[in-house]
Image 1 (spheres, one colour):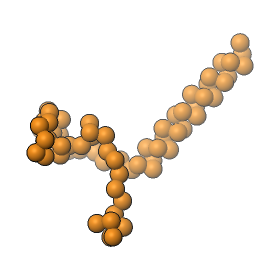
Image 2 (cartoon, helix red, strand yellow):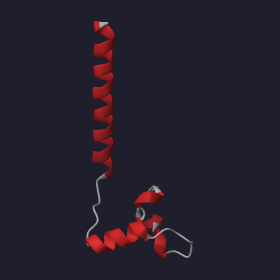
Image 3 (cartoon, rainbow, N blue to C red):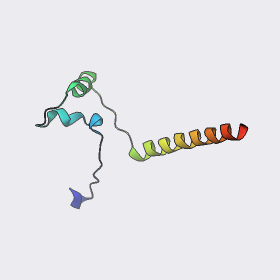
Length: 70
């Protein structure tokens, strides 16, 4: 797959729905919840990182404003 330009990404185990389907002994309540709901959301990594950076920048600006008014 790597030869076909497939990008691999690390995913936190809490977001890995299929972990309960592996041979490892895993908690399967998350998988059961997703199956019961009948849907699961995927998000664009670049957009999420931009939103997180934007939120951090807003917090830094607020902290700087508080420090300058003291």
